[in-house]
Image 1 (spheres, rainbow, N blue to C red):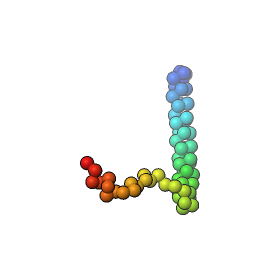
Image 2 (image 1 turned 90 degrees about the vertical axis):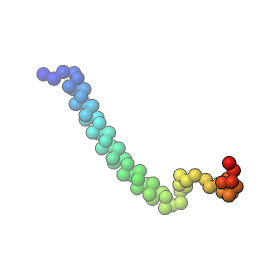
Image 3 (image 1 turned 60 degrees about the horizontal axis):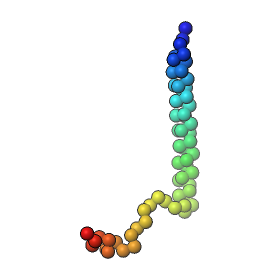
Length: 60
């Protein structure tokens, strides 16, 4: 006879497997969406360049 902790452990394993499958499937769709969006000219996560880098480098 299985105890309550056995049932909880099995349920946890099933839930973890379901979450892992969901994340893998979701990651694939997010990656393709991001790849397609980048080609459409959406902004990337680049930091803004300083306007005058020579002035910034001489400051100490």
